[in-house]
Amino acid sequence: MFSYSQDKQTPLVNSELKSSEHQGNRDYEVSRRHRSQERLIQSLFLLPNYWKLVPCIDKRPLGRKWQDNYYSPQSLFRSLSQEGQVRVWF
Image (cartoon, rainbow, N blue to C red; front, side, top):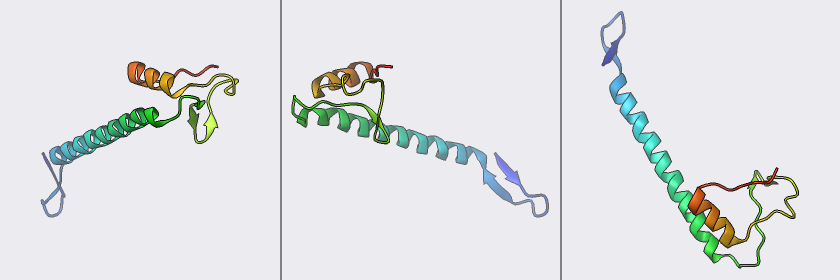
């Protein structure tokens, strides 16, 4: 559907086209985010087993007593691949 300006009666925006472009951009963003998450999960296999991993946001550790509540690369892989999330102790 087109919108028209009042003085010249010319199309301003094709709202259906704009909507489909927006949907395409959203699908691309979701796909890109999914690939990034998969790469992160797979990269956990490259880490040494003895490393202690703590979930963070902006370099701030999540959860209480994060020094005592950490993940091994294998347990973090299991949590992310099976549940799609990480449990944080509060």
